[in-house]
Length: 405
Image (tube, rainbow, N blue to C red):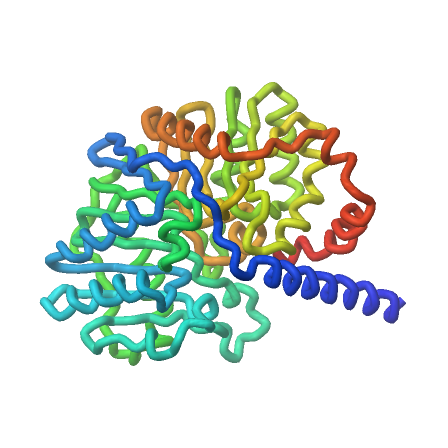
């Protein structure tokens, strides 16, 4: 039995490594094709504005303009921060802001940036930087709460404007990836600032002396009932984003349009989508035709049969990587954020999603979804069931890896 288990495990790992190497080789020299986007759309929500971005250049221009106009404080957090021309623009803008007296705090994930040059990761002393460590458990190697990555992407400037969504920082993301981010103003910005401060204070002693002053909020904020920021905090065993999704899906009566880069949910999540489709809800799932992680693509296909049989429409985005993490339900509820529909995001990493109850924003996201749908190939049950035997075999071999992703 032991030999059998080791053989199966070896086959799975070997197959995964082999697929990744072959896929990497095939991608060499290939450039993504242009894809349809919409210009930034602005919607009034409560006492503030929410602006949606579907093209990285538009987003980066507004983020850099906010940084360059900062007067008091900048809070910047990202998962990936490439050392390319785009990454340098952000680094220079943040350093310039610090040089003119603005408080600048930066957080980035060390594991996600292992391939980035160490010289790029050196900052002026005027910029306070928290490099979330590759291994954060210390001697508590048994504590699963300390293995989550910092997958969040946040920018808050002067308590007046905040940005959150799926975009990392890098030249490829600026023009080649299809992602979604939002800019918020009004009282909701304080909740985004609080999310940054809580993470900073939870982890600052990994980087600074114990005597270093924590990042304190200066004043209390007012409530914005239509906008909430849901935060996964593995260190505190808090994972509200999964519950947020399930509640919205279970309450849906008209439509659920969901976009995600990686689809590796637990069975309860799949059952919620199936139940919604079977009670007549228009359930559409938009995924990459080919993502940047081929193993995740193959594992996610193990859910397709039961979803298609239940009436869920599966739309596969072609010619470019769709990295957005968005959903809209019944023309009322929406979310945009950093969490994918997989175990790592929903039950492992530090993540943040904005949840908005507003017809205007839901309509904007529905229009974005329809633009994306125009660039998709829809998977039919007949096409899926007719796939080659070797594909079915590969899916079956990789299926046990689902809990790890």
